[in-house]
Image 1 (cartoon, rainbow, N blue to C red):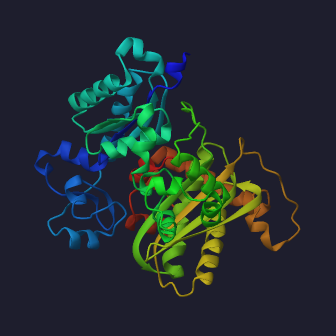
Image 2: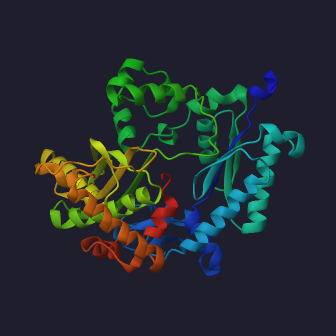
Image 3: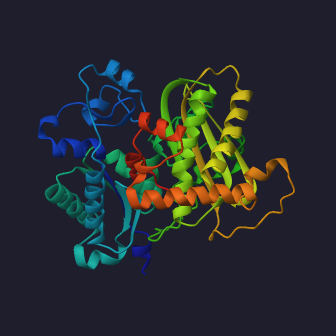
Amino acid sequence: MTQSQATAATILHADLDAFYASVEQLLDPSLRGKPIAVGGGVVLAASYEAKVFGVRGGMPGRKARELCPHLIFVGGRFSEYQRLGDAAIKVLDDFTPLVERISIDEAFADVAGCTHLFGPPDEIARAIRRRVKAELGLPISIGVARTKHLAKIASQVAKPDGLVVVEPGTEIAFLHDLPVSLMWGVGPATRARLAEIGVETIGQLARSHGGALKRLLGPAAGEKLAALAWNRDPRRLETHRRAHSAGAQSALGRKPAEARVFVPTLLHLADRVASRLRAKARPGRTVTVRVRFADMRAVTRSVTLEQPIQATAMLAEIAEELVRGVLAANRHEREISLLAISVSHLEESAELQLELPLGLADERLKPGSRKGLARFGADRAIDRIRQRFGKEAVGYGAAALEAARSVPDEFRELAEKEL
């Protein structure tokens, strides 16, 4: 590889615009140009016409209607999302084998090795956009840069339905005027912390003292964001990604922070996560929960176990203990708006270490105990029934009831980027 090739902007980040809402408008022409939201009790996705009024994904449906009285709610066509998302990624595959898909509607592509066939990166990006529009009827924005992080930011700047190419000599000037919220890993909580010390742009972050950032955000996050603010991102594309965690979340709107609300929700989430772990034969050791309160403040708690788990009831009980700990430490919080469970430190196999029946209090949480084996056996029986008759054929009591009131699993499974 020549020096010019090594320093050229050849990484593309392609992101379908307002994907779920765009698909609905594509399939029903009467919705085009109108503010629509996919969902009902909770907004799953919003069209650009709805976003103008402040409607966002994860927002309670009632609040969305207050912001946009003429908002149109539609149900999700999940098989169509999958079909059209796959077709869009296939267009990238036609130009380069180096494609890293990171969700149903976005992917990275490295075109360094195919410019002699299809022209420079900006021409390849334009060709991809033309094909996606002509063949699928969907808008797609693309960012082109030397690094993954900058390409992703460029695609966000390009929205809606645009193309932004960041040439090597212009990277820092382009990056430093942008808000920190565009950075990978800067969510509402991190953005609020940075605002407290007067950091609102990426340039201000880059010029901040490293020690202050580490104290504010933690050593790992502070160091990572400082590097990204100067466009130091050595990550290569991973065309065959191996998941390091599995997770699921449920947006609740505003619900009382009471057991009758969070216990069935956690069981429902544990069912979704554990079934995926079992399907891949990859149990995990670390269980993490996230509780978001009505004011959007989120608290995370985790525990690392002696043995990896993949049983639904076991995961639900561990998550429940963690959530109760969060609520006990935040007694002034009366309402919760979101619950999430994730399992990390995944094992490469599902071998169990058997436990002696010593009558210890925590045996029910040990996969190799008599109770743990019984729970795993019940899970596997449920898995087999679902494989034969579908996911709705059998469930876990309260979790099945919770599923009827929550965001459909089909939507979540398409959106989730983990295992």
